[in-house]
Image 1 (cartoon, rainbow, N blue to C red):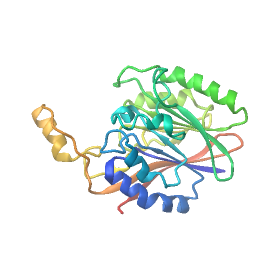
Image 2 (cartoon, rainbow, N blue to C red):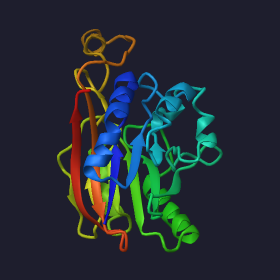
Image 3 (tube, one colour):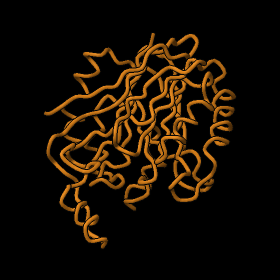
Image 4 (tube, rainbow, N blue to C red):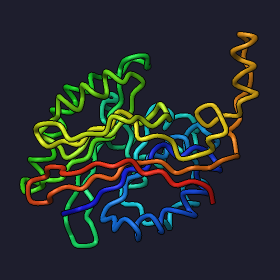
Length: 264
């Protein structure tokens, strides 16, 4: 069996702080073999920068995923080409920097493919993630015919779209794990074909907040219906994610469990 951890959206300095403080102990305690971390909110809640990426670069992370905020910091966009284990959603049109999937190995040499996808509902126009998922699976199997373990980070607003992707890929991938909405869902399960599914694995950041942002700034927007600057919150840092246990010989998931670590 292999144990795979996907850590939900790391939000600003509070998220980086708890990730650095707690990731190693989680890996040891849970006997994790492979780590995926979504970092699209790494720098102040919007995008990534060379400095913030360097801050977590020494952590035992195998693959980094992102989403629609990957493009928010112009200095971070070149990192998508420069960092081989840093992904952006595969369904952005051709010609954009970066890659939408990669294969990395566990310490024991077991290959794991990671696919990053982005939803269409309530998001900016982008290629169809369901059709792109079909295409990418073909590319993976052509390049790595013996590979069994495939994890999908489905970065989307709509719970229905994330769940639909799980059913679309059931039996073809090990796990479909949702990110982007920052609120962990309690629907983790193994689908009939052996694919683990959770609509959203949650956020790694400050939970005394509104999805990671200072509550006073967010409330002003709701009260006055006029723009207010957002600022990432700092209090009550928590690390959230999903732990999937799978059979490396078949690629089927046998267990999925929510991970939550409080405080620093």
